[in-house]
Amino acid sequence: MSAAKRVCSLIEPGAASTCPRSTAPAADWYAVARVPVLLVVDPRNGTWALHTRPDNGAYRDVLPGKYGETVPLPEPLGIDVATDGFPVYGEVAGPQGRFTEKTQ
Image 1: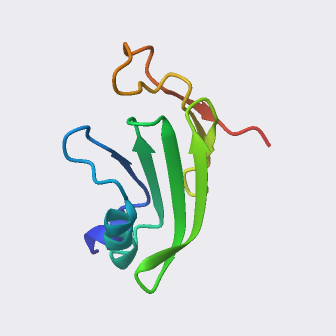
Image 2: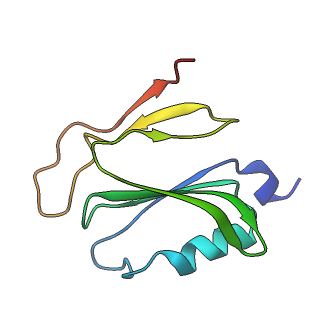
């Protein structure tokens, strides 16, 4: 089984010193590899983007959000990721983000 078929999701945090202004090139690379769910968190400005449905080297769906909003990871994960505890660069780090099960 290829690595892409074993990876059902990926979370990519941005690094202050190496994170480019745009995450599109990295997201496109993961789409080419057919990673079904990519969550990009950007601690520079407290935002996140959930990329889903890779097709022809790009993600068809992108759900943007900001820290404090819950990220709804689709199946097969089926969990919500709380982002209210994610640190923003330049701030004192608070509690880590929490994973909660989705309620139906």
